Length: 293
Image 1: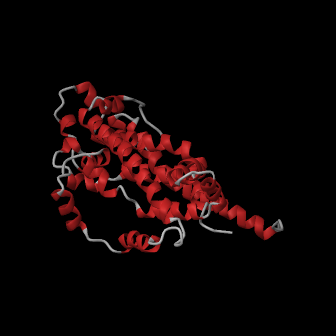
Image 2 (image 1 turned 60 degrees about the horizontal axis):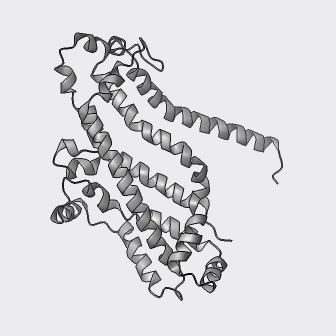
Image 3 (image 1 turned 135 degrees about the vertical axis):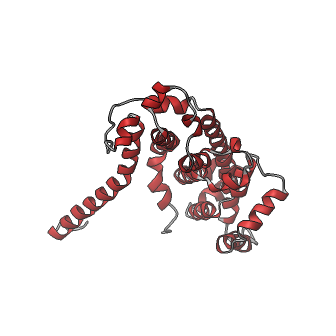
């Protein structure tokens, strides 16, 4: 128990104030983008919009949700997240489990572990990475976005350290009852590692959803871009579809800036919806296995 001294109270107050200030700094840009997306074109052009919508309208979102290119990119990203998360977490689990064993149980465990860790320390570079993907025929396919990052060594290291912190008596009891490694993994390790798996799944989902650079260089056709690669082109370029529209009423309500912010917010929304379901596992999953008693 810590003594509830004046100095400790002051520390907590300044700590909370500092964290609150940083939280506000992170939230304000998103609030500003949201306000612009719900405002009329004239109000945004005049610079009246700060943190609250002016001349509230949903026209920008109606335009975005009827935009074919945006919906195709959204579908590509959803497909990428589903395939990438399932494949990535499967490979993480079946790799971390044997690497968590002691040398007496898995003789070459240390050699394999250093083989994986070496990939973090040494990188072949962008050009060999691209040539490899091209030579195996993955360019312009969804697998070009999924397979190169399917084995995440950082996640493997976190999970194997968590597995090493579990009581070995549980597995020994299972082996005595006739279970094998697959049974032990499925019935003991996976249920006990739910917080860690939920945390690593969140990492994987966010990584796949936010990746944009690989989509730009691995996809030959813009129609195959994931959402973040598409949004990158939208933010930089002018929306030619909006510039060429003949709907005067639409142009009065929306502009290039309001539609861009609407697309950015819609692209952020799926992660904002997923995070609350995994938040309760987040801190526990990060700290479990980090220190062994």
